[in-house]
Length: 131
Length: 192
Image (tube, rainbow over all chains, first blue to last red; front, side, top):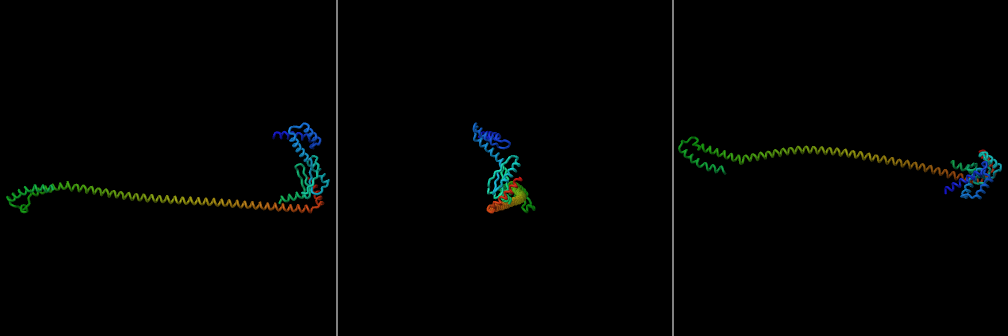
């Protein structure tokens, strides 16, 4: 079972490498990979597709700046954040807006596993921890 | 018994001869007193014989018995003296032994008392150390518990303050306030 999962993981990595062009996940490549898997139906196709989906999701998350906010956010602010993150990670990163009233006020930006926050709830939480 | 028969047998002829002789001779002083030499000799011989017989049959055994008795008495006295000496020596040895035993007993008692005191002191010290350790641990545990309670109280108070603040801010913050804060946050984050 472990050997089957390992083989599926290796095939998923190979397919993922084929899907990335210039450090960006290519939609066309992803479509081609899916067509290949559908046509040839490799062994343990479900496991391969699950692993491939996880890798693509992680890579897409690295290309996305998820901006959580409480209250209105100006489009210019989102653009500025995207530009700043693109510059920081040296790859194109798009900003997406998601409302989160729990922040009370302020922003929380998540790029991949990195989180940047400047919010009232965050400051209150820091204050709570520091007491 | 035997000498008396012998005398009676000898005296009869002698007395007859003596009577004949006395009638023939002039009586001297000895004759006047009735002294006959032959009787004297015979008496002497009889006495000697009696003496010899008495000596052999009575005196010698008596002397021997007395000597033996004296020897026994001497031996008894000597034995008694020896026994007395031995008794004295034995008493002295016994007293010495008793004294030595008493000294040993006193030494053993003293050693036992010393050992018991040392053991008691050791037990007491161990008990004191154990009690001190327990007290120290209890104080440490109390201190830790106190710190833990204070930390928990502080955390709980902070949590309550933060929760209250969040509720207040959620009610009091206006959209304009949030927008303004968001702009500030965006400027802060773009400067990362």
